[in-house]
Image (cartoon, rainbow, N blue to C red; front, side, top):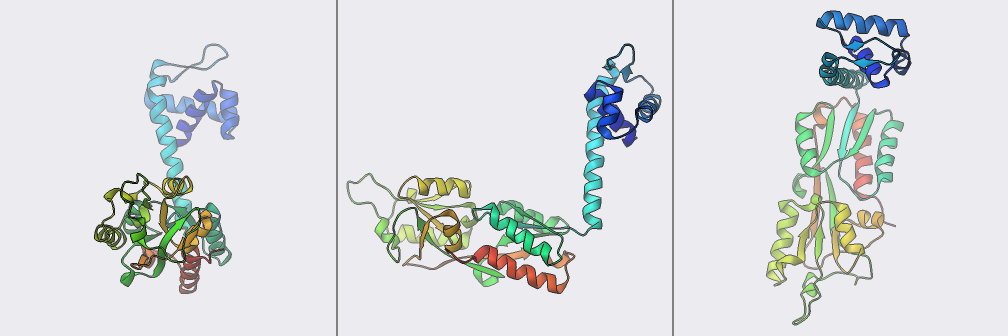
Length: 288
């Protein structure tokens, strides 16, 4: 049924039995037989064969979309089957600013013999997939005391900063309309980071609008590059984004990550140890 549906879809899309057969790499007589067998199985003609050009019957037009869906579902099943046979592990990581470092992490894992696909994903997606999807390891946000990897946080800017940033210094001067905001990307929209910074903001009598949560790291970085705003991030992340990083004077903030799904991943202990080290390099790479 799938082969016949694929032949029907290809012929329909190419408006030709000859071109449709070539598109899927099957001899034209075989394609013709498969379409005819599909029509016999379904009980009605799908294609009007009068003339050179292929024209779908009304029945064929109705069945074209379901046939496409069947072909796509079969292709997806084959893809998942190949991944399972090859024991591919999907590693979901946070967005730290550049695709190069994601590629380096994937290359290092493959060089060590681990069949790993590394993908950047948002925090909520990582949390869901790490607990529900087989052969998936997801770096999920956890408090520092429960973390396998810890990442120090501070403030970064496009321009110069003092050696240590006092959040109190961000309080707007009386009568001034200039407001410096601290931007959090989605990675830091978690209680052990966001709430601590919110309490500090309130204790220092800063404006509520001076702590802002962006929809993405790109959005947060754009605000920082375009003015005097600051980005909450790690030293390595600041370096990758071309920003200057400094610690916060009033409190210490840390991102924590744990590997959800790691126990079920088909990795040997040596590969797990290698991956742990490479992930630490990805999260805490040396700033330049």
